[in-house]
Image 1 (cartoon, rainbow, N blue to C red):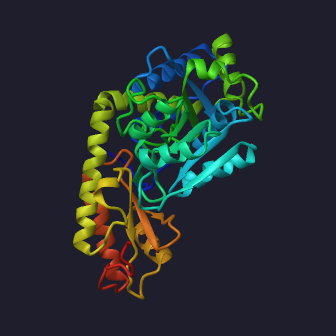
Image 2 (image 1 turned 30 degrees about the vertical axis):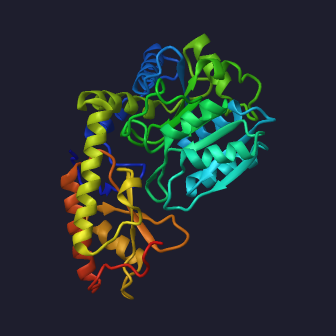
Length: 377
């Protein structure tokens, strides 16, 4: 699926893109040009359609990484007197807690073990215990470990209790099924450089139209004002400030390829096959995944580091990179791990190839066993 000599990015984003997506960035665009604005409008329509949003939802693109869009969503959609419950089982959940505190939004941090999912029952109990909570901010796939949280169940709890739900779907949108007609939520946040297989530089918020229209004046920031961005685009068809034109053009090409592949079902199936191939190949080498199969999302897999005294991540990383694959360091706090991504313009062949590269690297380093030092609790 890839042409060229660049290393394959086995990370949760940025990720390896197709030649067609790369080529889409070879043209320069004027930010006020009607042709460019038509591309932006078409992308927004398609993103709402991927989420099955119909007329109730709109898509607001934002310059910057996915975190920019998360901050914009919280700063706009949570009133200044609101209180946010964050089920927290990893680094990206913890980042939302920090965002709330920076924005002076009251936050209830619900700690959950980093190898356990956030459940509907846990969220329901937290909401019952604290009626002042107005919103829940959920990370769908916590890529700190590669874990999938129970979006569908939590959405039903939020609806039953009349709470707003803001979903960071950064690493799940376009890979896992999300139907906002069935799974009610206020806003879903993702970005160009993840499972759509574009390049980084544009976040977006798919948000209920009535919720967005009611948020005027909430924003803490001019640049992050989601409502103002939407209103300006509706009025002029243009972005308020200089857009990432090449990123937008690449995303248009990436979405076209996503549709041609068969949309979310086909992309999800490819990633699931990548994940299964990787885990089985690494198991043969002696590596053990951190997560149980039932909570493992097919996005990125966390493996326990070998207990062999000859193992050192920096050296391991460098040798695997020299063989053409870029891995990701671990994000966990309790045990030493590393991560291998399953997403991007890659297939199960690349998963077999990276396993072979890791096998050769272990031999080069004189590591006889990949067995971990610690067993998960």
